[in-house]
Length: 80
Image 1: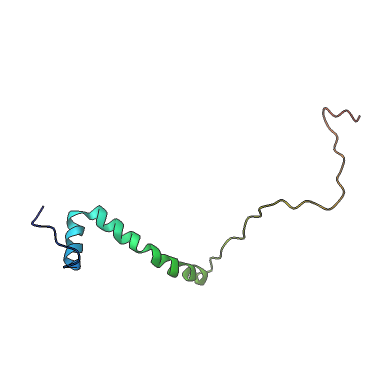
Image 2: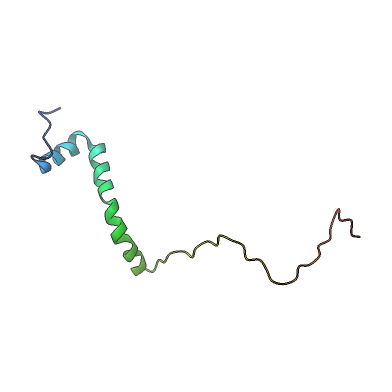
């Protein structure tokens, strides 16, 4: 390690430069995670502007038909 670790609250830009060099996986994971809340605000209007719309909701019940039911016959039926 090259020298002492900079303190974040004293010199935040210097700390970010140090973290990008010395601990890149931790630094870049924090940078990417920081963009998450921004995507909640920016992405939906951009999607709609490009013509991408939300899919219709999946029905949670099956519609029961109102017509009379047909009597089914087939293999193993004792009705014949």
